[in-house]
Amino acid sequence: MNLARLKGYSFELGPIRPPSEGNDHSLLLRATRNCPWNRCQFCNVYKGKRFGYRSVEEVKQDIDIVRALADEIKATSWRLGYGGRVNDEVVRAIVRGNPEIYGTDFADSEVLRARLGSLVNVAGWLSSGARTVFLQDADTLIMRTPELVEVTQYLKEAFPSTQRVTSYARAKTCAQRSVDELKELQQAGLSRLHVGLESGYDEVLQEMQKGVTQQEHIEGGRKVVQSGISLSEYVMPGLGGKRWSQRHALETAKALSQINPDYIRIRSLVVRRGSPLYDKLKQGEFHQLTEDEVIDEIGLLIENLDCNSYLVSDQMSNLLWEIEGKLPQDKPSLLKRIAEYKAMLPSERLLFTLKRRLGSYVAVYGRLDQGLNQKVEEAFEGIQKGLPEAEAKVDEAISALKDGFV
Ligand code: SF4
Image (cartoon, rainbow, N blue to C red; front, top):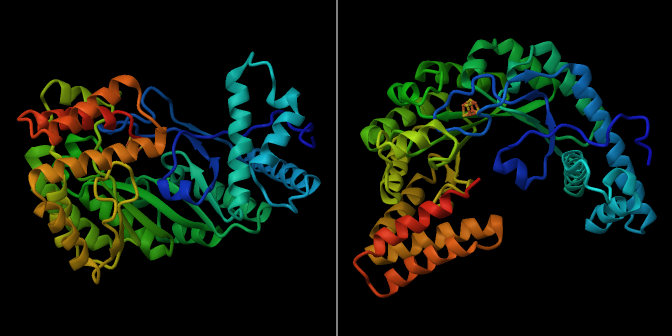
């Protein structure tokens, strides 16, 4: 294998990327490690992990490793008669043919996992045309602008097929950059930023320790839009709990209408184990919305949006993932779908909700373990027999399913 000149056979991979980048099999490159803020109450992704910059040289070396892996994958494909196409057989042949790298001995399983993860990521990216790249982790824009420009240019030169380079950024960091800096990044090839707006309501932002105000959200978002970088804003229905549900929806709609991002992505709140909010929930300090109340909140948000964004619900946390369309023209059909859901009989709605949540879980994990399966079966039985405790059983089953949501 022609990677012998390199120290390792893997490049760094961070823990998450947006669902859209998964669908597109984006190449994942870690430009910084973890989150420089790391205080949001609902987030467990980087808790206990220290933020770190990576040097430009380190990131470039990862890009070199990707290139070497890509060359090896393509050469293997030709050798096996697939004419450069990448499939599972090609990946398997590389793994089997290089036991000294992908190993039969699992002495250091972490190293092995990293090598396999890197190989699979590059193979998936090549098989989808090597068009999209996602820079990890939580706030790539925090890099010094000339350094991020250098990394992006190096990446585009290394892989001329790249059509889209995207990353996460905090709104506060966007607000701290000048439009000229953002334009420079756009010209270097940074094409989209994913920003977690979560809420436009200052009380919620403060309670959740988001570290940003509505005004900073608007300022940061507008600068990105002005620079020509495509902007995805993530909103989190349910984050205000019962206390602030209405204001959360209305103020979020107000902020988004002023930003006018390219995409609004709905990511309904799932209170995750390991997040400070989970402890507050268990201690009775946070009162979660029901599934129906979250849908009402999404309806109120959509009603009050006055922008030209494309609204998407492409995350497993959402019950109605079909809520998707271009604003303002699709607003009536989005609200119609919500009205249809609300018009169901209570028992129909319970059944629908349980099936949806179960479907999302199975799509990721394939099947349920014994305990979870029992909960779900009891919930179905409760609905079918019209038992008085049916709703409680469904709630219990859904909470258990959501515990596994990613
Ligand atoms: S900024 Fe993002 S990654 Fe960091 S703690 Fe908040 S939600 Fe989590």
